[in-house]
Image (cartoon, rainbow, N blue to C red; front, side, top):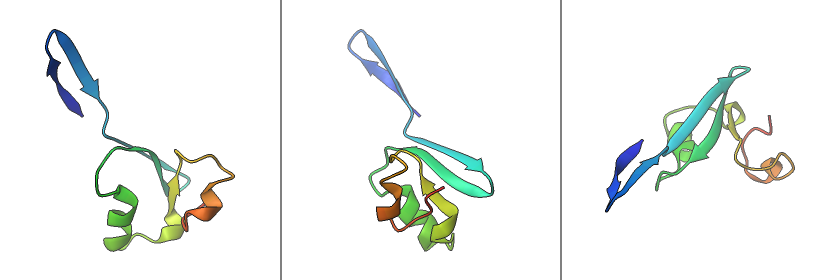
Length: 68
């Protein structure tokens, strides 16, 4: 989470949201600079266990990761 202020305005932002569904990692939102999916693969998580949920289902087949 990013929390802070900009003048009189309060800022609250979710940087990363990940769910575990059906034994897979569903990345709902990735606001990181490095990209969490690549980091997970580098740490040994299999590509077929990661779903980029922020992409429409018909686009996921082009990611090289799990579709669902």
